[in-house]
Image (tube, rainbow, N blue to C red):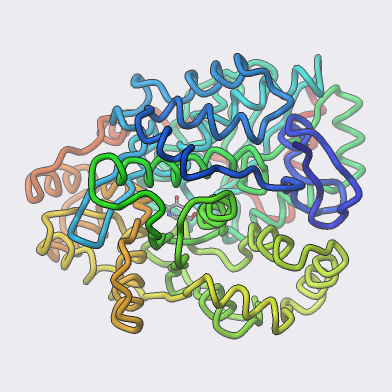
Length: 496
Ligand SMILES: *Cc1c(COP(=O)(O)O)cnc(C)c1O
């Protein structure tokens, strides 16, 4: 299995190379040259396996330059029961005759990013041995809140790596911020940016393709890589849990082999929903992808009109991990449908020049026939948290609530009764303040008192990792202008 860049189809690299590099030098993203097929017989076989066995089976199809033993070691290192609080790893819960919640937040940082970022450092270590032996890797991360912590936790004290996380100073929840600035480990750094997530992401992308910095670091024996979902190593672990969820429903609940399901994903950078799309292309029976956005509804507009236009206001919402205007992984979907690097180069040069692009009608039609796009604002998000809690005694976080709300709209609009998997992407306790006020109207106590209050009110337990933040020492206080990111990185890696 080889990988090519969305902006240069002629360039083919191994999985290890794609993972070490993170992004292609031409600015494109690495995608598999073809997608492996998983048959219904395979699914039937996988239904009796555990998460680790399912992951090894799927990953072996993609990481053909890894040995079987390397893959087993990586997967076992990532998904042990010491790190995940549910033995299912990705846990499926049935809410009613149609809705299954796929809980992806039982990892160490309480958000779905752990599903990929517990595995990526293991994949990176093996890939480095194959592709960059003796080099140091500098991981740069732009985060809207959850990726940063998950990447820090995954890469802390991983030999041969250094990680810097940039987060928007006023754009993350208190719990998210505390999780990051108290991070332990000798190879980690966290820095606030005076700007929003897109500023942080653009800054990081610019550094990755800046030949002056790349050369300077190279002289110091350092290579850049990415832990954002532009890295193929972030996406491939996410394909696994859609297969796993289908197998669990097949085994424990009530679908028949081959029966189609819908998938609903609260979407930001488009990585999670794209993984489900790849799953479908590999053979997973999925009918419709429901792409749920918050008030930053650029994807809703795109799916409905075929025009991607970032010339619009950026809103800070109570689902901050989806506060994004440039959804990087959309490029991979467009490449898959256009099957032309020239077309992608044109679209993305339009985006750089005019802040927008328009896709061809036939591409628009293909997207519309598989994707439904919808959004909701903060008020509706809060109402949904309250409604779902009252109706099912199920507590969901602010991001997952956006997905539920958009799914309800979809059902009203289409009358579709197909069984549906909703990706539940974070623990409600990561967003305690807004979750608590949604169900009780309360906002008067301090943040840690709110954890207790939410726990008592809903008869659920707060994750200890979050409770422990109360007494954790703050290690990182840097805050810089977005234009200073390059210097910050240069200084850090050339003064050593
Ligand atoms: C990152 C994140 C999302 C968005 O996922 P993408 O793969 O970026 O689309 C949604 N919810 C939560 C809680 C997240 O952390």
